[in-house]
Image 1 (cartoon, helix red, strand yellow):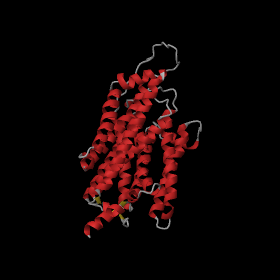
Image 2 (tube, helix red, strand yellow; image 1 turned 135 degrees about the vertical axis):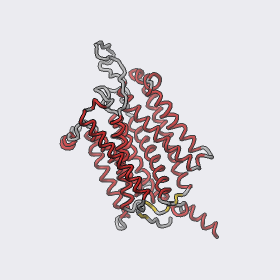
Image 3 (cartoon, one colour; image 1 turned 180 degrees about the horizontal axis):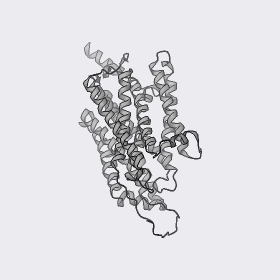
Image 4 (cartoon, one colour; image 1 turned 30 degrees about the horizontal axis):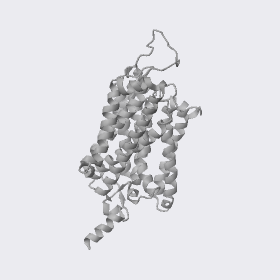
Length: 408
């Protein structure tokens, strides 16, 4: 493999415009958070029955994507695929940026951000939420060290060892995020051990889809070359991840259908849930799963940059729908307070909870996404995260030898 040269992205009106646009979205997110803080959550669609709204959908999606996008770096340093090594720095940068964006949404959606001090100083280790605080903060530290050993010439020889540690930490982090839902036994839609591997598969799919779109956009915007062979390799890997997500989703719902206690919530989500059923079948399964797989493995669109970018965008859209169905759809179904017993009162027994996202919620979620992209953009401007070229003959020894043979 030819020596990879990294450089900062050059400034100019284009970069300045992107930074200003992202800053405006971040400002909109802060205004949304202030509105929710000042007026209370009464201005949102959240209630005492649906306590996790659209901000949590964005936050969970970004956290999963942060874990999955680091997979690009570990494929190169841990599993020895040299074609992926030049992208490792950019992968680590986006992993940190996406996690910070997701955590910022969670902090600003607390209602009282000062409660974070309590969460950071008082720990209940019987709660998976307390575990995840250590996992998230540790992830930032581990990826920071991972980036340092990659960018320092003397420490670069340790990149493989640190990469293994980051790989394991990433798996544990995503398992912890999935366990937040899998261990909530009171919710019929959540109570399943398969949530952990499902979330790992989701993270791999979401993260790689975002990375493909980002690399294509950044390289096109900065006039850098990226080879078709490399894009096709990542696209085929993305198709595998998308298929694995569909597989674990099928396992989750088939398992719940087999258990009589979950038949009610499965009937609600799959057939009678209105918007949740439509999002599940129409957006998550069809547009976010089957269509992208078809685009990736079709002879024409699978090798087309337009087809690859469209497939990646659809997987992101389907991922948001999937997280929405899991987070909000799972809360909309009524709690079974006394299994096997009939409960009667005048307080919405057995009624499906209604939820309509409000503008402040959407603004906060988009603000978190913009914050992640802003951090990444500033990082690429200040430090050398971006390779000057990802042409096939520069990163793949096989392609390089073919090019030499063609010249000779």
